[in-house]
Image (cartoon, rainbow, N blue to C red):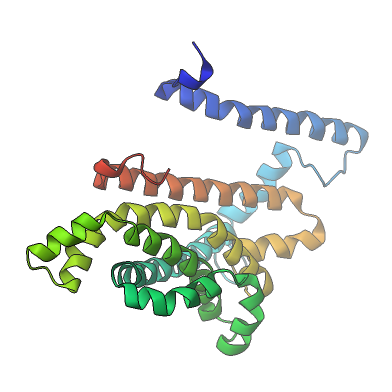
Length: 271
């Protein structure tokens, strides 16, 4: 059987997906053990025991100054900022995309503006946001929202505009207004695409979050990583990076599951 025609079963997919991760972990352990054999005080590639010891203090011991458990305080702060920024971006993208996608005059008027905003590197706006909004939570959330919303709007609006014209014609034949076409025809079909757009936006959203926390924050996963880097604390940085990756994977899995359960008819679209 040719490989192009071979579709692994669920158990095989899990095993095949875990294989590269296991290879990377084994390779890391071999290289780290060799470095520590040459230099027991090596900080660049810490062994699992050192990472476990460093993370144990951050995960289970309260900070004497704040009274909070550092690891969980960082996680909650980052998830709050990420969730709020993505929530605002998602709601904005849905509303604006429906209007742009369904109404050609609006699309012709504001489409170029959205495209222009979408191609601006959001990190370049970070100084402007901090100057205009201050160094508090608002600027960090705004960076995430501004960073991902325009790209989501372009994608979803183009998807709605490309819906079969027959659907719009039939709805008008039945007496539907522009508002009803937007809600009854475009919205249901746009929802799976919206979830797909959010999944694609997770990676950039994390980048914007970490960037904002690295510059101006006193708590958060990105703040902690950039705080301890001056001490070459790879025993903290590597677990934090792995934790961020795990959170992102869980979010993507939850969104994919939601899409499959809520919109099974759209399975396979946008993938």
